[in-house]
Length: 272
Image 1 (cartoon, rainbow, N blue to C red):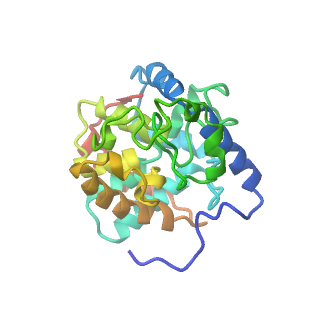
Image 2: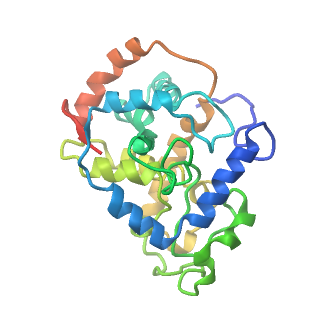
């Protein structure tokens, strides 16, 4: 994919920087092993049926407070990503991944401020993720916030491998709670899911910037993770560089993508 020269992911300038910094500070200081385990138990109930397109339309009311690049509703970002992938004639399953990759943010429909899963408090849904249970790397956005995470005072959690074994694989590590892991688990629980392994990795790890862009967590990676890295980097060029003020006719978009949704996820609801 050819991309125009433009500054993306600038966390030092702009009118929304204080909002973004506040979101990241809360995320970095409140996302602990205990918090992630509690959120998994609370939100991975798979008891809220919703059609994929209906869920997407809910994101027309959601603006990501962690994103310095765009302030359009998240639904528009999903369409821009999918259309960028489609323009490059990539496989239909990858177009679908582009269309739904942020769908986990619909947690805001049943979330709350305390969990960081509401429109007002988004630190439990959005932002670059990291691993909990091991040392926070300097490749995180605003690394100066790392020292304020309570787990970094715990000798079980504050080393490069922490509570994990070396080369255990990132699939086996606890990720900071957010829309990536939530959607991955929802789709993994969906019996009609036919999205290839590559696409599921793209969904699960596209916000894992300290890993796929920062180069951290190599001591925890296994052989499979290096394949993940190639897949996720391939996807992230579209996730990042398709952001613009461009909007689309949603009726035309729905007509094109609905058959692809049905091909890989079936015609019925997905249980969130």
